[in-house]
Length: 89
Image (tube, rainbow, N blue to C red):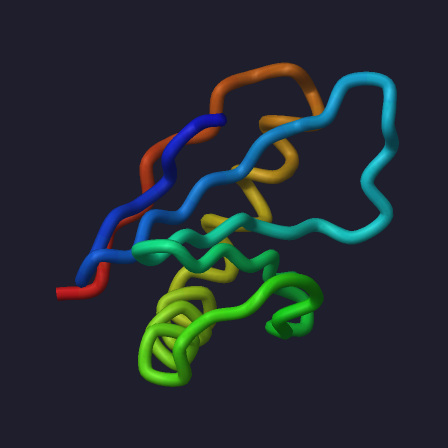
C-alpha cells in the first residue's frame, strides 16, 4: 500500500483493491494501534477508530491537500503509483 505522507506518528496510505470497485475516494490512516478510513470529498472518517487529536490532524492535512489527494486517487485508479504528499509540519 503506497505511503502518501507521515506526520506526528500518523501514516497515510492509499491503495487500490483489485477486483473490488471503490465507490468513494478515500485514504487509510494509522496511528499506533489505531486504523481508520477517511473520505476526502467531503472529509469524513467512515470506518475504524482514531484518537481525537490525531483525527483532527488527518482532517486538517486532508483539507490542505485535497487536490493532491484527488490526483493520487486518479493515479491509483489508472494503475499508477501516486506521488508523495507533503506532511504537516
